[in-house]
Amino acid sequence: MNNIGPKSQAIAFDDLDRAIVAATQSGLPLVKEPYEAVAHIVGIPASEVMERMQRMLADGIIRRVGVVPNHYALGYKANGMSVWNVPEDQIAELGRRIGALDFVTHCYRRPRHLPEWPYNLFAMVHGKTREEVFEKVQQISDLLDDADQGHEVLFSTKILKKTGLRIRVT
Amino acid sequence: MDGNFVKPERLTPLQADLLNDFQRDFPLCPRPYEKIAEQLGVDEAVVLAHFQQLAEHKYISRIGAVVAPHKAGWSTLAALSVPEDELEEIAEMINACPGVNHNYERSHEFNLWFVVTGVDQRTVETNLDEIEAATGYDVLNLPLVEAYQLDLGFPIKWN
Image 1: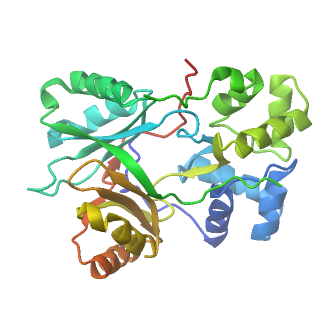
Image 2: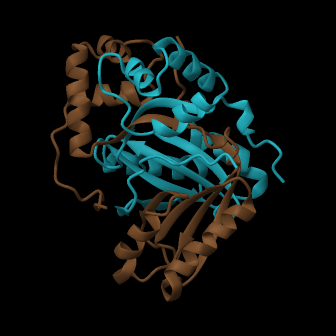
């Protein structure tokens, strides 16, 4: 797995790319020719929309194009943000191993803010119940072994805003 | 503890395939739903109809591009520690600030967690300053340093 941190080299990305990303991020329409619809919004031919998306995929600007399931609606009601205090000199290797677990959807290194925030590794764990999340967090702890120098799990208790990226049904 | 889990029988096998098998590599061709239909041995109209149903039940948020962080813009994860009785009010103030999304209450002393996005790092930091000014609370600013996971989808397990 590649490192895909923010320190990557500058990649060609122009206003048309930005417009395509904006149009596709909010959802391709459920019509026979969805890229035509995007092309119409952006003002270029559909063939160019597809070419540019292909290029952005190759450059890693777009990670994937596909179905984004609503985990919450599908029953994954327990959304646990696990946060870990891990030695800096091991974090890249351990982060990659945790990121490869199939129940971890996001795994990021973030800065500590001492004294109030000692955690430098974040792994989002989805489960149907809190018990299931705790069980998976224990698996991460076992994997980290001595490198687990403290962790917590923060469950979401209320959604106060979720950007309305809704699929357009036409 | 959780009686609302989607029963597999509420989804057709085709819908389960559509949910799980096209989280990445959604076809980049003029008629993508037709291509999916060919792979699954059904008609394009059937694929479209089932995606419509999945969307209507909100089982899918969207079909679209998932963008890598910090390549086409900037974002940070931010948290605040606020008294419980001010939480809703503070959350509303934060939500009114530019670039804020995914605002959650979480079970921790830092009980308000949200993402702030912008075209570049400077814009995001200006937005954070605005949030501090509006709420009167210090923001814990936790920008991404490195990503270890490609977010290539997530297998939905039915049982």
